Length: 258
Image (tube, rainbow, N blue to C red; front, side):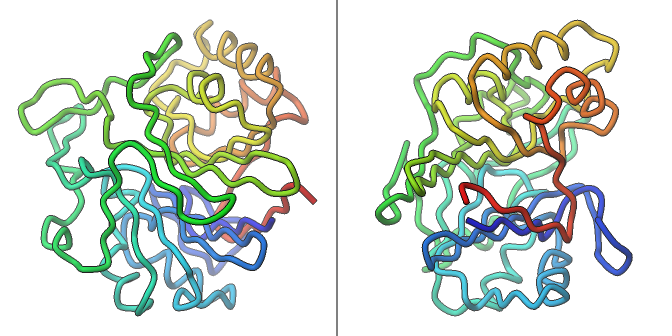
C-alpha cells in the first residue's frame, strides 16, 4: 500500500503547497482512494506536481464535515467524472469552531449526484469499509472545541474512519480523530493508524500528551500523523513513542504493509 500526502500543514519540499488541511491519496490492491480534500484547490495542484491524476480515483471519502477536509470537494468533482464521494449523513450540517467561525462544507454540493451518504458505516469493496463508531463512548481525551449550528458542543457524529485490510493487516485512516486518537485505536484495533490526532490545542508540557503516548503505545499499533496534531505536540509524542510514530507532510509518499 502506498499513501501519498497531497495536503498537510507543512510541505516536504519547495514547490508543494501547504495549508491547514489534510488530503491523502491511497493506492491499495490496484484501487485508488482519495481520503479528504484539504481546505482549497491546492491539494489538486500538489497532485498534479506528483503526477497523480485525480480522475483515476475509484472512490473518495470525506472524513468529517469541516472545510479543512472537504474544502476541495468542488475541484475534485470537476477533476474526476465518476468516483462516488462518501460522507456521513451528518457532514453537511452547519459546523463552527471555538471562535464561532463557520467551518462547514459547501452546502451547495450536498445535492451532487456523486455524494453517497453513510449512516454509521458502509462497505466500499472487499477490504475497504467505513465506520463512524457511533455509540462508542470516549474514555480518553476527545476534542470538544467544535460547535454545532446551535452553539452546542459537537459530538462528532459526522466523523467517519476508513478501514483498509491488506496482507492481513488493518490500516485505519482518520481525518482529525476528534473523538480521540486513543479511543479510535482502542475501538478499531488497527495495525496502523494514519491521520491527525487533534492535540494542537494541548499544552506540550501537559501530562495529557505523555499519557496519550503511553496509551497509544499500549494498543500495539504504529502511527502516522500530522495536520492537527501540532508540531510541538508531535515532538513530545515522538520522544516517548520513538519508531512507532511517524510524521506526514505534503509531497511525501509512504509504504505500508509491504
